[in-house]
Length: 178
Image (tube, rainbow, N blue to C red; front, side):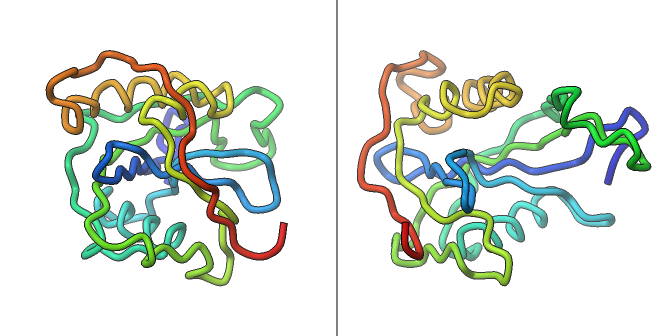
């Protein structure tokens, strides 16, 4: 679904564990890392798209997570000019995203990056909550910053939106052979 301004409707998923670390996933066959995200189909509500994308990209089901909150508004980013497919109709210049913050309530054993025929990720790890804001591809950084800051009080009520230093923790979890 691309709106009249050229933004594709999308959901973003920040999945946290009990320690406040977040799920950081490696795109299949690339050295690019990001949060799970994906498009919203026609007649699909954002929460329905979130659960569908969660399953497609992590193998997790609704019973494996708890929704802690979502962004109040759509957060938008523009694609760099070289990534815009000028011949496509309707023209997509970027994405508008509704971000969800989830807590893993099931076991890590429930992750299955190959739950579908076309897996998007081939590795994952738990990282510091603020790490993705610094490490995601440049054109998504402002959206990540807005989403993480808006949702931080739901997971860190005592510190609120204070950005904390940190880096990745824990081992990578990969499927297949690297």
